[in-house]
Length: 201
Image 1 (cartoon, rainbow, N blue to C red):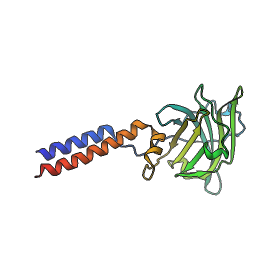
Image 2: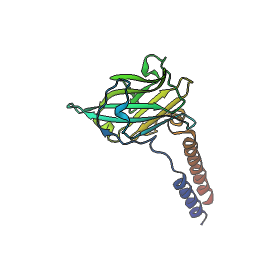
Image 3: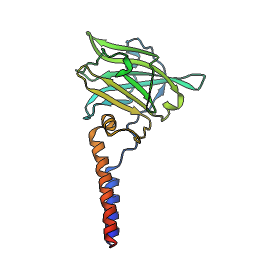
Image 4: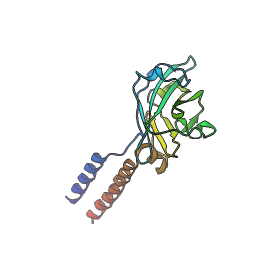
């Protein structure tokens, strides 16, 4: 009876909290854009990704489209718009040191990159990059930016397996609360396992 009770409690706790299996998700649609700092073409397109700090603060929002190439690759176009009052750091070099895109954990070079300015402040950027077309249909694409105050914003589209990602990276990508919840679930599972063993004695 004790064993059944403990097992039931563990299952209910895990089901209620959940362990994140992906860092984030977003739906890409086909299209193209001109990377020139003029964001008029993005106005009617939906946001597909939030870039958040390690504490969960919304730093910027990302809009994105992609176009297929004949060789099985696809070119992605993104517009990252900082939240009101937030200015991006334009001093880093190379630019992808802090403003980057990764495919399955590896940095992808920008084909083109252009900061978006408003009254002399850098409030966003446009960029294009080329990867296998499968990345726009559930593949793991991660995005990262840096503010002038040194705060980072990060998020991902598709399914990004946290396996191999450090807790610090996972925290920056999905928020500290989710990381702590995952650790709590694992701890409860371990305690429950030992509880079952003890109940057999």
